[in-house]
Image 1 (cartoon, helix red, strand yellow):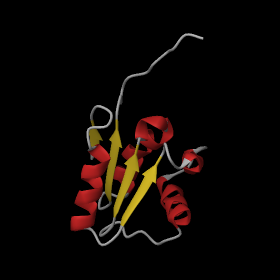
Image 2 (cartoon, helix red, strand yellow):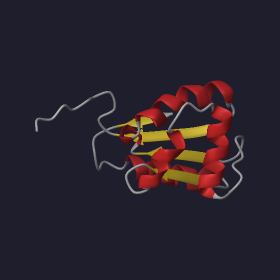
Image 3 (cartoon, one colour):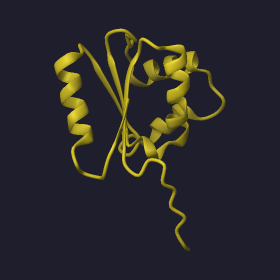
Length: 111
């Protein structure tokens, strides 16, 4: 599930509350606060390798059937956004949510 909306309206809060209520474990990957998280998605990696990289990053086994993974500020990592399709194809039982603002909008600023 991708939750899209304006900045600072409570997307992350809502996903965290949902996760705490319905899942034994919630893993949050915040692409703004955790700058090194982008490295997980570098290169040409398959979803099995990606899943293993997520477990290494969180230093915990992730149950695809029981746990929730939240990708927060996903618009800051294009490869993470693209990986959602492959994770859904290879891990259809996984519970993955993404939150982001300005998804689908690319800003080309002037220098």
